[in-house]
Image (tube, rainbow, N blue to C red; front, side, top):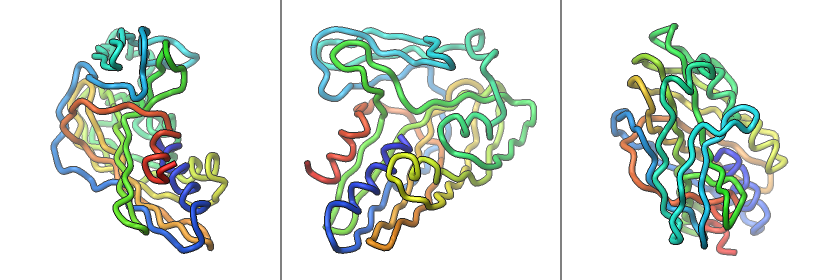
Length: 233
């Protein structure tokens, strides 16, 4: 999903001559509410197939059937499957593409996080619970879901840099500081990542936040589909 934010920035730079501002996501204020499954709807799905949460090396951690209309309900893996994969909060977020220092109020709490799911059926591209909307010629909104597992209750705080994603996928070298402020409960927590990007012919500046939200069914899209919501192409 951070790849998505970067693609949006690059698309806006190429879409016109005037400087444009994209406002990617207001931070919801809802508290962390542990979840046990993900209800979702895969955009442009047809036919039969499944969707999977994959871990290191492509290991399948969870799988669910997808209905012909794209809807699914994915049970999230539990403690037994995740314990060997738990890392520090900083390392867990680094696995998503952001680097930096995140402090945990419980130093012994292990973490695991993911952004995308892998469909196996009518499409094979990774999908994200993300959406974007251009609200005017020069602005738009973006939101994207992150799922975080913690082994014990903990408060996570700090700042991580998601600039590498912008560099990798938009070819723009800029820091993207993201403020982390999450009170996580044991088990899976639904979080929202929002990034504000200002794009112009002279370059890109960006910043954002990662906060807890109440989970709800979302549409899961490829990065290209999210970009199309902004560009209209």
